Length: 102
Image 1 (cartoon, rainbow, N blue to C red):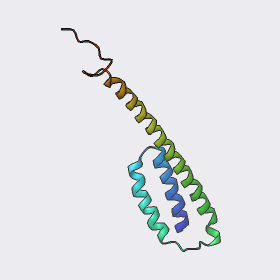
Image 2 (image 1 turned 90 degrees about the horizontal axis):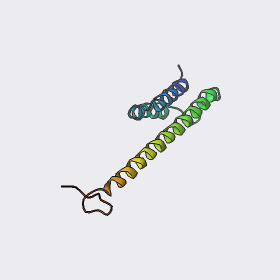
Image 3 (image 1 turned 180 degrees about the horizontal axis):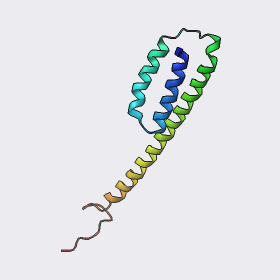
Image 4 (image 1 turned 135 degrees about the horizontal axis):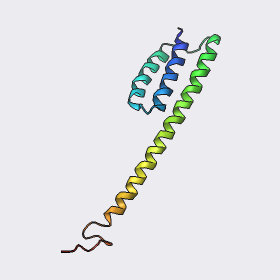
C-alpha cells in the first residue's frame, strides 16, 4: 500500500468514526494521519492524484458530518437550557412560584 492509499484508507476510517459518533477515536486517528502526511513530499506524484482526491472528498464529508453532529448537540443543549430556565421559575423566592400547602 502506498502512503497515498494509506491516507485514503485513514480518511475513510475517520469518516466511519465520525458517522458512528466515536469522536474520541477521531483525535487519535488524526494524529496518525498527520504523521503520515508529514512524511509525504511537498509535491505529490501525478499518479497519486486519484487517492488524494478521494481522501480530500472523504475528509470533507467527515468535516460536514462533524459539524452536523456539533449542531445537533448544540440544539440538544439549548433545549436543556430552555427547560432549566423554565424550572427555575418554580424555585422559592422566584416570581411565578407555586404556593406550597402546609
